Image (cartoon, rainbow, N blue to C red; front, side, top):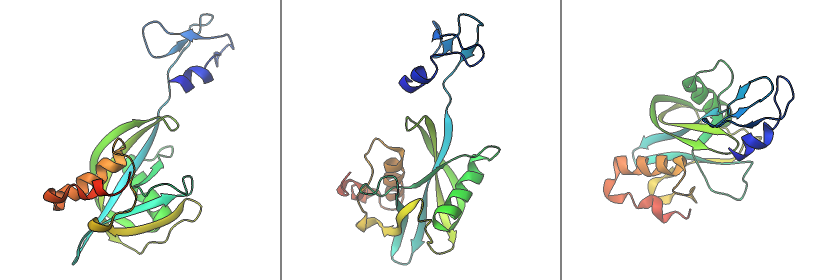
Length: 182
């Protein structure tokens, strides 16, 4: 919201200074009456799972934008004229070279970096070997539930996805994710 107010100080139609709208989260132009609303960029996140003879594994990756950070579920922005489901399949194929199936909606979270609505899914691995895009992904691996890497903070939807995937197969071991340093 702060970024929206900073970048919308002037009207895009007549260039007059704008002012906060009294009744809505918007800016209004007193000269021409145009009203500007914050834009939200839809983005997807997906936690890919696979069940092996040894148990469940989660596909987690470290992105190039946060090299020393944690491992997370994969994410990406929706492109114009693309459905959120198509975006999931495209991003997984582009970033790690895999196919997924059984896409299931998990939840959403407003995310201010930069101004997104993160729409989260779980999916099952449907084939392919990890082949990471080095421009996007530093590392991507299948992790067994008892050997998870450093994970995102619990407030993130990525962490909630991971915790949910663990609880699905090992409700009494839901604390496994909590052992991984946030």
